[in-house]
Image 1 (cartoon, rainbow, N blue to C red):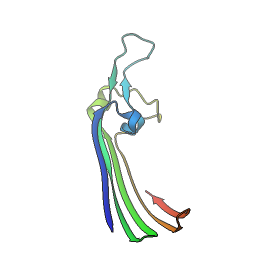
Image 2 (image 1 turned 180 degrees about the vertical axis):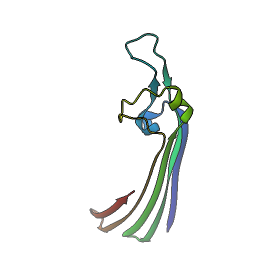
Image 3 (image 1 turned 90 degrees about the horizontal axis):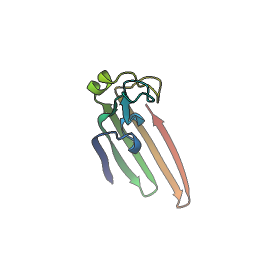
Length: 114
């Protein structure tokens, strides 16, 4: 009736796989300048979900996720705000939903996010 799933990561330049709020690298100058340092952003985060299957046709889900780039990297290479205009130091999100599936080929989904 209950199912718990989660995924956690820690790495460098993991924006391509969904980590670091999409920011893989930081740089400290113009990218056309050969003296500009490009640095892979260290980050850690993950998500967890709890599913409760009340009946074969009705399930309730709650989830929480967080992504946290290392602040020392952001301080040392603070000029790169290309993705969102500013650098984010933390990203958190929570959601709850229920799924009702009256038939195998038809589904109702209600979702709320914070």
